[in-house]
Image (tube, rainbow, N blue to C red; front, side):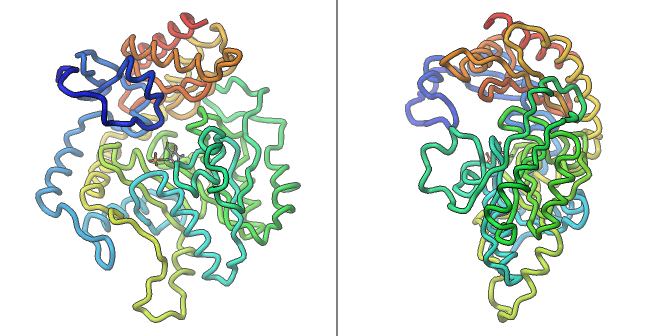
Length: 443
Ligand SMILES: Cc1ncc(COP(=O)(O)O)c(C=O)c1O
């Protein structure tokens, strides 16, 4: 399609500086494998799995065929007081992949909906057990849990919150962030830290609210949107122990770490820690069709079903018109089969090491580089801010990389690479060298 076949007057772009975009638009018209085609006919390599979604690469025939077949069979059916076969099959597959007794899947359509759903499940579960006073949530500074009011409230990225103050949930606190400047360079392994990042939770936050009032603690196993910040060794295990000690639910937001990014099914598997609720989206359908969900431990579902209410009464007043949409679920089934058939999760783990090695060797020591973090199939470079213009250096580098044919992700003063699991060494070299050139150019 030629650029002037459409105008740009009607669409307001999300999480995008619209004024800058209109001057220099980036528009995709096709994609295949590792590459996009742009409106002006250029090839751009996808260095960020299109927002961490496209694990299996673009235009995968088994997923496309499953969607087409489902459209011709059952296009949509009500999700309330009925369901569809694809939703049950997808839920069974997802539950089978999840660790421990994370066995019950509540579907929604996005990571933001998964965040709000998980918070509502936590409140409803405690109430069902006669502990309705547990209504405090604890998130973490610089956490990202989407853009719903619940997710924003427990999230900790200042720019996502500052305009919405009075509308945020009232009973929320935040743990300190997990970044240790002494561990600025993390190379394919969990950092060991002298800092105790959970001391404040135990010594200030929990006593302040009283642990008996806390419903849930929600964290991303690795802080993705903030810029791939990795917790120190033992952090998540100890968080699990603290939650267990006080009867607090632990929610892992695995919208980014779920379905292969760490070389395992979930971040929970990578870290050997089973949460009570696990949120997913993105890679579950290879990004092709929106689908999200919350996987709940048996005890949560069981508590909600143990009610004196008559059987015609709904146990959990929550759901979306498109919960368990048959086409999205057909896409999920085909995607999860494809990941397994092609061994893409172990491959992500292996290529993650290749990415981490290439990233450190090409980028460490370049001007303004103050940190590099690689673990799983993702790597991030932290850059010194331009005084008075936070975020500008990373944004300029993102624009420059795009012009050079590589899609990378700016996040504040960090630039992230997280390619599809099908990535080859030659793609990694191209991505890393393009990024390195742009960092030099913007010194
Ligand atoms: C950890 C996490 N949770 C929630 C979300 C929100 O997902 P969505 O944009 O699908 O609403 C994201 C998106 O990047 C995410 O990274």
